[in-house]
Amino acid sequence: MSESTPEISVVIPCFNEVGNLEPLIGELEAALGIVGKPFEIIYVDDCSTDGSTEKLAELVKTKPHLRRLRHLRNLGQSAAIFNGYSRARGSYVITMDADLQNPPSDIPMMFKKLQDEKADAVCGVRTGRKDTLGKKISSKLANGIRGAFLNDGIHDAGCTFRIVRREAVRNLIAFRALHRFLPTILRIHGYKVVEVPISHRARVSGVSKYGFGNRFWVGIIDMLAMRWYRMRHLPTVMLDDKFE
Image 1 (cartoon, rainbow, N blue to C red):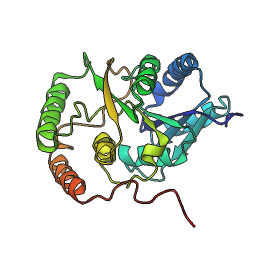
Image 2: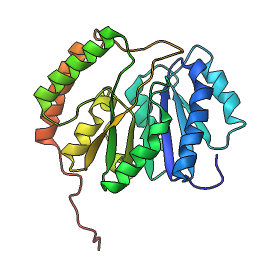
Image 3: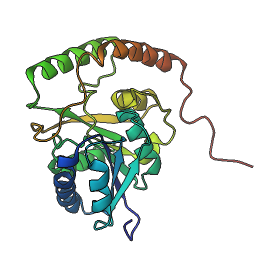
Image 4: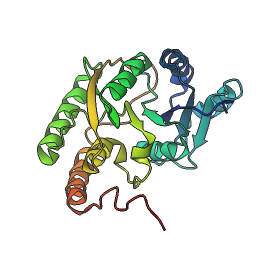
């Protein structure tokens, strides 16, 4: 635990990313040093089996700003992000993948965008993607269908590299596709969400956990749920500030 209360919390879901842990932490330390605010890095270990658990336990001993949570069973990326949000202490919460494909060097630019736009969230849109052709095609197709169905103005829902003001995520409801629909939910509740182009790198360690087959049909159900939620949600603010 850091001695000062952090202003920025970085939440990183992690499942079998042992080779990427230490390099990513080093890059985050450099990028957050440029921002110049106290920070914490929270790894949410989704019941890894490749040594990530042991490596994180080792790293925590020497890095006071590093914290770790561990799921007792594999629950998926949305659960990891949700649980990370619940433990974050910073006024600003950054989420990103653990695979080193999101360069932390983009964080200062994203943070400036958040402040300049007086936004509640800044969401990355990956440019020059370094994924396999199949993954790029499936992602483009999924984003196209999603955009046409929801018309929410979100161009890269699969990118979890985001900065969100913590008050905007205090009352989220946990569900399995939360990480893909978070920007949509924020806009439904009247929060200002802006997008910014970000860099993208090829994976050098570990393997991807996603593919078209494990997202398509459940994605259709999730989009129907978002349509229902947009019609039936309660507003975020329903009371005035007085309680007498």
